[in-house]
Amino acid sequence: MHKYNFVEVEDVKDAVQSEKDNYSALLTEHTDPGTKYAYEVLFSDKYVTGRDVQLACVRHFQDLLRQGQEDFPYIYDQKWVDAIEWFARSIPDPTDTSKLIVPMGWQSFILDSLVGWRGIETGSRYHTGIVSVARGQGKTWLASILVNFYYFMIGWNATSQDFLIASYDSDHAKKLFDYVSLQAKTIINMQDFSKEARERDVSAQSYQVIGRNNKNIIRVGSSQAGGFDSKHNLIAVYDEIGNMDPKYNESINQITSGQSKLANRLFLEISTAYPNVKVKFKSDQESTRKLIEDDSSRDGDKIFMVIYAQDDENEVFEPTTWEKSNPLLGLSGQQKQLRQALIDLRDNQEREGSLASFANKSMNIWSRQFQNSYLGLSTIRSGIVKDFDINRRDVFIGFDASQVNDNTSFGFIFPYRSKQGDKFFAKQYSFIPFARAKSIEAKSKQDGLDYVQLQDQGFCEVTRQPSGTIDEQQVWDWLVNFVRTNELNVKAVVADPNLASWFLKKVQYYEPKWPYFSLAPTSFNLSEPTKDFQVRFINGDIKVLNDPLLIDGLNNAIIKEDKGGAIKIDRQNRTSDHIDTSDALINAHSQAKFFFEDYHDENYNPLNDLNKAERKQYFKSMFGG
Image 1: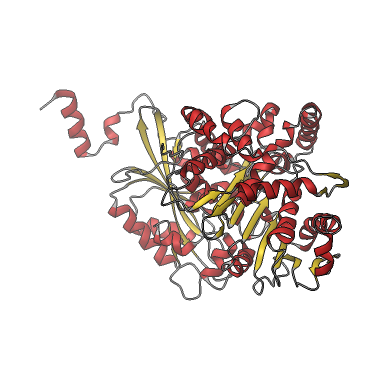
Image 2: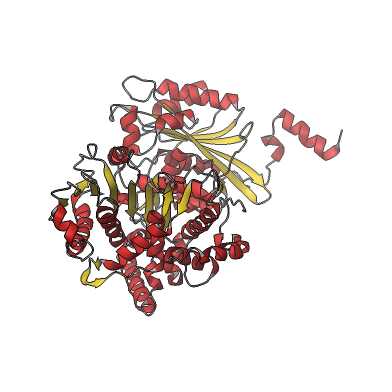
């Protein structure tokens, strides 16, 4: 069996074409719609799918091959697959209860995977499900099938079972519950369930489905209302979890900890993308993707994930690719009509200046590119390098000061030349206050960043002041030590003369050899370096480390334009969206951008810029000796 690692593989389908015979042999035993769909995704042009869907399909077949191996205690049980397929096709469509549901291939793949994969001795394999798809594709409908399947099939013969439908607020949770309730009202009158439903005295009510005799209850809840920690939910579905504020993350822990002892438990995270990339749903996707990409790893065996999304932000303008995020476009006879509706929606939202909403909701892209975002997340990540040696290099230093709530940040830009041309390496170091938040834990929760962990990783320091305000001496001592330890040649120090007046005075009196520049934070002063930094980053001329604090700062930044057309960066959320690292880097770039320019008069002698040792090396290279 071939071991795959897809970390840097863009075309997953192409990478597994040699497996066609091995995978097709499995179709004789596994004839279910989900497995058939996965095979057609990988080895036909029937569907237009993105990378995450293809990864999920490869994983399904690789796991089918793994059955029976010592380190893989799971089986794909056809009895369970048949059960969910029968159930899904026997209950009404909640949007039109006069019609039965006929799942499409992608819907069967999700249902069959979540229910069909079993532990050999333990119950269900997948205890967490991560499902993401664009709006209007039936994700709530899928969730309602699973809730009712768990209630009427898995938990039907048990007593005192809890079932939860949740969201970040009660309105969104109620929408999913209404779907469940409408289906339940029909199910309790079906021939296969009516007798036992009467015995259990099952009733589908406005806010619960309850069996009065067996005490099995489907409840509605929200993170805002709380109260999750006293229940042991056989299944818990969290709808639109992508819009859950990070401050409610603890509510998820309350749900999942209550499920821990249930063999057939399932926590289903289901949502579209949203603008805030710091939410739990986004981080869950990224961490699970890493596990799935390393196919031979067993670390993620109990998590199922499939994401129907565009692979690139630019695909917003490529309708032929939209089936990636809108799998209903695969419906025969309806493609043209559905695609045109999406095109009309995109064009309308673009005219209204709300194209970002279309990217998030209709393309399922985690993106701020279309809401005056300074740099898209994919652009930022394209500039990441594993390491960069800064020792003995020229450096431009930008400084962004604060006291109480915002971080205080240094931005460092190191010019260098490579075979690809003139480049800049950018890095940051920040100091974290917590006076307004009262504690560093509260500050971390507010900003969606684990500052203690980032401090351990060498990206920042928490202020040492007990009051939580910035310690100016701590900031200054760190910079002086950083420059001396790395033997840096400081070409310029740039800071706002208002908030950083204390800092500029220290430069002037204690490090007079460092050239320093005052830069007032106006659009007039910042427009040119802001644009130049953006263009260079997009063109691949700026490299950064995989620093969450720097990446978050760049991704939070949006462009603010004044009446004269000059720009500077700003932030949308004044409380939690920090851009201090970006401000500091742009300050540094206001001088660094000139580094490779030859702005000298006719009497300029390049040797004047060299010290004694550099001139000696220059002459040695010219004349030998």
